[in-house]
Length: 420
Image (cartoon, rainbow, N blue to C red; front, side, top):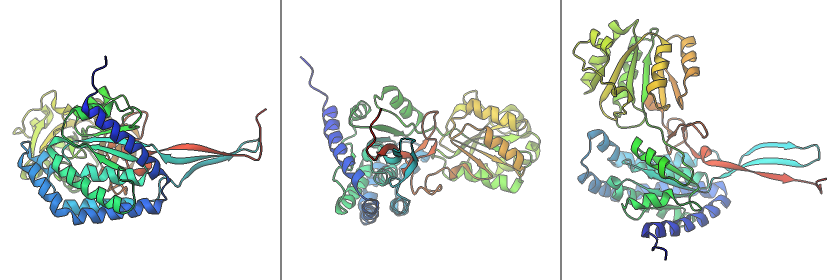
């Protein structure tokens, strides 16, 4: 006799059936209806801001992690307003579903069109940052996909309040009630139910630390679009402007240390290290940064702590910077290839030829020249929001917006042809 299915599996099945029906309805809605719903969702977020902030205060009261992770969890009026603006910015983007991607006519007269369409139902599993739920909802609705959310236990009340506000706005605008759903509890078994929800969820997107991403990739029975670990590098080349380099590095490391776009390792060209490293260390130390440095860097600045073998493979997500002195651009690229996560890597230089060589040689999802790695963000790229930074060899790479969450189908128009 078969054992009774886990209650979370039963809940996921009910949610999955509802999500499938909602996704089918969303795919048929014209762009103006979906965009109007996003604008109504933004208005609902603003109206619910006091309730969202109060729910977040409950989460913050029980939080025991680091300051950097606390910053990721914290919501205030400005951050709720940023979520609302994100929905409006997504609404203003071109419709990703109105595109004919290619069109051609065969010798037999058949006219074939490749047309963008939604993926179906997305499952988003995320940690710490409750605003991720709003970003994911915006992008899912814009791209005509249903969505099932599962936030982290530390942000449960915040995520639920955001979802309630969004659902109220979306429903008021005429979207299906179940277009965006959220896990009803913090039970971790619901994650397992999502990962095995073949037939209900078409794509799982984990948004969080390395442990979460590895768990999802290991256990999922549905396709996974993995969010990248942010082992990001800023390489300061011998031809860098010192003032620019100091300003960019301070921003790349210390603007917000707990986000995946933060620089974790400084690669400094040996030709300029004696002249520039003391100033870089002083700048960052004044901002509260700690360091892990290799032997050549400690020869220049003896007060720097020594880097352990594992430090250059660590995503600190905190006010800690690895420092390594390298002999030229190829050495910098070799270090990135060995220790990086193919997320975001930057070069600071006034030499355009070297910059283009560096950018062309990177395997990273995002390469930057004379800009802070913290610009790796869907909003900064003009997507309004993002659901993560993807890496990998067989799917989209970089910030994921509405266009990246569509697939395609074919339409064939004939004039009575039959196949011989």
